[in-house]
Length: 195
Image 1 (tube, rainbow, N blue to C red):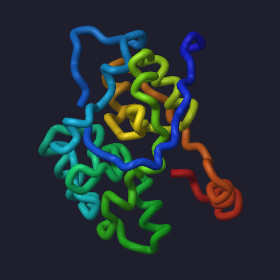
Image 2 (cartoon, rainbow, N blue to C red; image 1 turned 45 degrees about the vertical axis):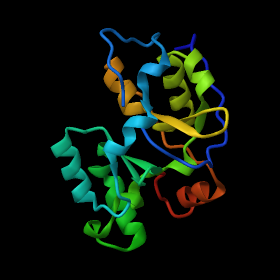
Image 3 (cartoon, rainbow, N blue to C red; image 1 turned 180 degrees about the horizontal axis):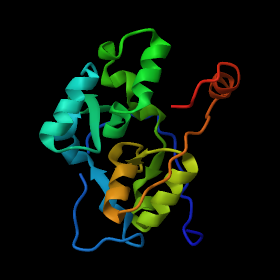
Image 4 (cartoon, rainbow, N blue to C red; image 1 turned 30 degrees about the horizontal axis):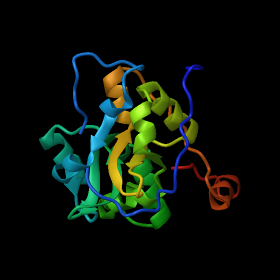
C-alpha cells in the first residue's frame, strides 16, 4: 500500500444529489477509481426517506438485495448514507441510549453518515486515481463514504468502502477518528465510543 497516495479532500458542505457501481469483467486495486463511484443518476432508486425506521430500512435492504447501503434523502437531495452493517451493529443501541429512546423509535436519519459531514474528492482527481488511492484515502480519513464533486462543488457521486471491499474482495479498514474537541471530550470524560 506504500505506492498509493492520499488524495486531497475539498469542503463537502454542499448541496447533495443522486448515486451504482458498474461491473467490469476484471477490476483490481490498480483499476480506475471510476469503477467504484456510485453515479448520481442511480441514487434515486436506492433512496429512502429520513424518517424510515431501522427495521423498515433493513426490510428494504433485504427485499431489494441491497445489503451494503442505502441512500437517505428527499426527492433528489442526498442527506446521508446508511450501511447495512450500521443498522445491525451496536451503534444503533448506543445512539438509542444517548438519545434516551427505544431502538424501535430510531430512524435512519439518527444513524446515517450525514452528507454534509462527508469528505469530498474532486471528480478530476478521481478520474486520475486508482481504487488503491481511494482505499488509502478512506483508511487515512477514517471515513466509509466519500462524495465526488465537480468543479462547481456539485455532488456527482459517492464512493463507499463497502463497494471497494466487494470489488476487491478484501476489507477496507475504517477506524473511527475524532474530528472535534467534542469527540475527544466524549471519549475521555464520558467514556463513549466514536461512532
